[in-house]
Image (cartoon, one colour):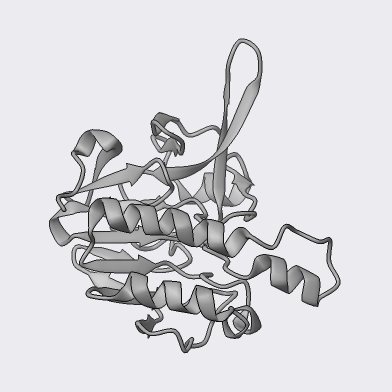
Amino acid sequence: MQAPAPSSGYPFTLAGQTLLALGSGALWWPDRRLLCVSDLHLGKSERFARRGGAPLPPYETRDTLMRLHRDIEDYQPGIVVCLGDSFDDTAAAQGLDDEDRLWITRLQAGRRWVWIEGNHDPGPVDLGGTHLAELPQPPLCFRHIADPAQSGEISGHYHPKAAIRTRVRTISRPCFLIDGDRVILPAFGTYTGGLRSSDAVLDTLMRPEALAVLTGPTPRPMPMPR
C-alpha cells in the first residue's frame, strides 16, 4: 500500500527534512518511512481506578490503539517511534489485557518499533520493540522532553493545545508546535488533556515565529498563540 499524498497532512521542513503533521496528531517522515506518535498514555483509566481517582470510561486504550492502527495502515511505516509516556505508568503497561497486548504485537510486525523513555514510563516494557532514552536519526533527534540547547529536535511531553476563535465559539484542539529548531507533538492518547501554547514554558521553548498546527480532519496552521 502506498503512503497518502502530502495533501493529507500539513507539510513543513525541519533541518532540511520534509515532515508531515497529520490530523491524527502523528508525525510522518516520508523519506525514512517513519511514523512518530507521542504520549499515548495507555492504561490511564486503569491507573485512575487503581489510585482511587475519578472514574474514566475504560475504553481509552483501545480507542488510542485503533487510531494508531489507522495511521499504520494508511502510511505503512518501516519505523514507528513512540515518543515517551506511552503508558500511564509501569503498572499500566504490565496490566494491559491479553487482547491489547496482542494488538500491539500485530502493529509491530514487520517493522522496527522504538519505545522512547518518558517520565511516566522510565523503564523497559515487555511488549516487544526497542527501549531507548532517545533516538538519533541525523539530522533529527527524537526524545521525550525538549532540550532548549538542541536543534533538529522532535519531542512531546507537554501535550500542547491551542484555540481558534470562530464567529460563534472558541474551539480548542491539540496541536503541533513548530519552529526552525524543533517540533513538539501533541498527545496522541485519549483522555490526555493538554497545556495551552500560551503557557510560559512553551512560550520560552518556541521561537517568536513558531506555528501551531491544530489537529483534526484538516490540519490547520496558525501563528502560535502566546
